[in-house]
Every structure is written in C-alpha cells, then in structure tokens.
Amino acid sequence: MFPNIDPKKMQAMMKQMGLSQSEIPSFKVIIEKEDGDKIIIKNPSVTKIKMQGQESFQITGDISEEENLSGEDIKTIIEKTGCSEKEAKGALEETGDLAEAILKLS
Image (cartoon, rainbow, N blue to C red):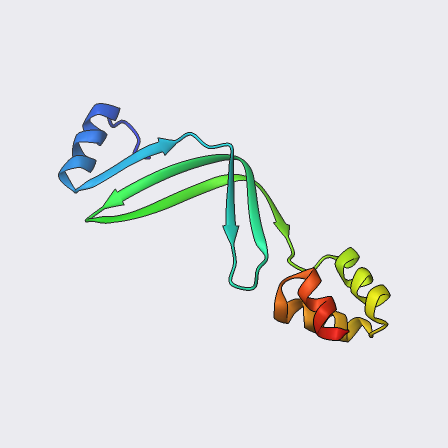
C-alpha cells in the first residue's frame, strides 16, 4: 500500500486509526438482488474491513449473473396456458414462481 513501510508498523498505524481487516475463507458468494436476480462470485477473495464501528466487505473473484426468469420457465408457461410470451414474462415476474404463474394464467 505504502512503499518502504514495515508491515508491522502499518498494522500498528491501522490499529491506531481504528481500522482492522481480516480475510474470510470462502467458496462462493451469492448476492440476491431486489429483482430476484443473483450475482454469483466463485473463487472469491473476501476481506472484512472494520473501521469506526462500521463493517464492510471487499470481494473479488469470478463473477457471473443468474437471472430470475429463465427461457425454459417462460416456454413452459406458454405451453401450459397458451398465453403470449409477454403475458408469461409478466406473470413470472409478478409471482416469482413457475407454478403460481401457470395458475394465474390458467
């Protein structure tokens, strides 16, 4: 972080400022978004940082996103109910569940 500073001195300075950090061994981190989609981070490096009573996390790794609406779910709803793709998507977004979306449109 700073050149020519001894790591032990750096730790002491961080402690004086009320800053501490620790590594959290992790296999996978999943962040669930409000819209139901997920951000999946595989092989993560997770650092927990505590400063002035607040905790935050720094995460790096291989990132992928998983959408709540899958093409297969939409096709299934269309096949079972005979509705349009737009109606199938709307029902699935509203209910968040394949079976409930089919019941809603039946």
